[in-house]
Image 1 (spheres, rainbow, N blue to C red):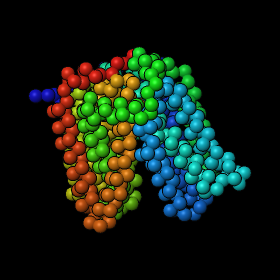
Image 2: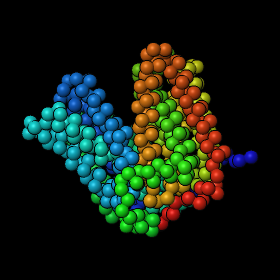
Image 3: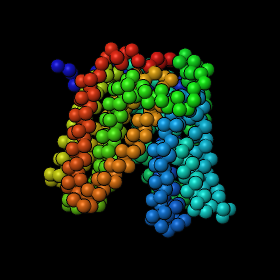
Image 4: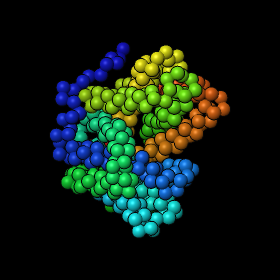
Length: 428
């Protein structure tokens, strides 16, 4: 019987911060994620002030979603063709310039709504490539045995950005104005690029050989799809897990306020505390994962399945919630269970994908996640309105349980021998 309690490292993932290259990457992400958190509030507030229309404000969210859905596979091809470090630097600089143009053009009365939407769209195009590039770079900077804690450390930066960014944005808007906040956010992207500049990212022999080939974009896309669909089918299983997980996790975020309003006596004041509980659960879990030693493929998949099962139980527990304190505890459990998924999933993909295919595979995963997130928000929003919030939250819990079941199925079909034959070659 497998031991469900993983081994802990004496030093933890924090020791990776002492290494020159990963440490710089981590600090770049901290700065960038806080900037992202600031932008989410400041940009929406700026657009609403400019237009006075909630509908025109929501279009910003749509424009930020379209590029990852349509362009991620194509972006993945170029990520595998070009040095990823310089791609990340270019993307940060480009996003910084585009964000700075919004308040700059407004100052000179040159910012129309069409220009604003165009700037947001192009910013989203550049952002679509950063996540897969980041996931592809991590295996080049750390040992294979450190992939799990390294990915957990990266996820901690996201949690910090979610917790600090919006609060900082609100305060800064009040003190220095929304336009200056956008200038400040643009500066965070440039600071991130400066942190990335000294990083040394070793080039694998596979990538050097690939740069000498003359494949077309279509051939490279077909190569990536062939790897996912036939050569390493565990990736297809991981994508299926990601789709189910993202549907449930994204739906929970949007269903929770409706559930709190219609099904409980907690009230709006406690809703903010529930969000904080969820964020705290995610951050605490990410920190704990930085101390967990690398597990084998089957163990990681079973760990994901277990965490999804716990999350499903916690979601269903909310329908019987007797008090705000217990509700906060259950929401914290949901946050913790969802925080388990990405670092473990990333480490699996990084371990079993050759370096030369990393950008394309992560782009496929990213596209699947974005599409399922949009579908989850729309579907569960409709269920909440048409059938009821209790039914909607019940379906979210069911989605978590189905994710756990599919993950266990993938775990049973995963072959260590097959994985070893196609395992990525990491150069440190």
